[in-house]
Image 1 (tube, rainbow, N blue to C red):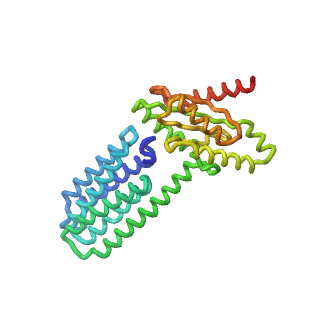
Image 2 (cartoon, helix red, strand yellow):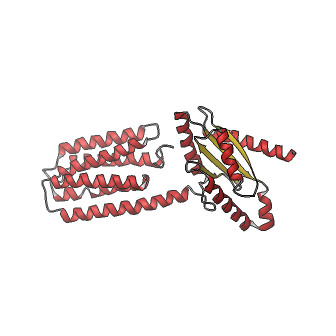
Image 3 (spheres, rainbow, N blue to C red):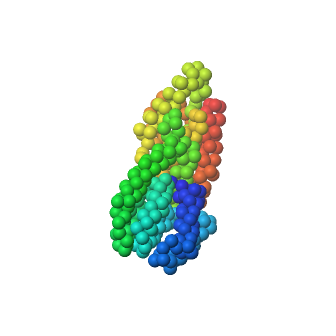
Length: 312
């Protein structure tokens, strides 16, 4: 799930805001009821759940795990369904539309589209059951319009968010991961490897004499070379291998479940993929070592090999 493990950021903050605003609205409805039959006791309870839950989410010092986010969204759906069930008027039922829309849009923006669709389907299903079980009637047409709107907005926002995530994490020239996206994904691979005890290698690939290509043939030729190289490399990489562009003519590889021998074998296949030369630095991750330290050792190995080749 994007943004949920690498830091708190907007997903956790907005989830807390969603709870706090919902709790505040419930408190307002209990303090100033618009109908004498309004479920005042329930509103006080739901308001407390929202404020306490939002406060806990806001003050929690660690990144939110995906299961926490999924559980929090499912809980909101159930609470809204209960509120729909106990609503005293048709207007009270339909007035839950903004809350339902906000929850669906949150899921669509921050979760992968299949997960967002699942949350929206659950949200629509349970709130519709609550509405059907409510005592008031006469809101079927506006409720169906609300459901159709929520589903359509979820699909549109989810697709747009996916496109934005892909653009933000992709190098526009070569189509591989950019530096920021590569580091985030490689850190997750490293964390998983250290939990399981599997080996993991990181390699830095620096193109030899790439500047001469730009100076001799122009930057267009250099760009074409970068695209051709990355295309050939990706054809020979495994599905789990992570290739990223780290700088102008420098690329980086994360090789999960790969020891040093396996890494050199794979790098040999990459060297055979294209005649243009490059130098590589390799580091095998050590237990408890953070990603910047692994990269630093790979970088040191790279430049040691470059110095050795110049002396040869």
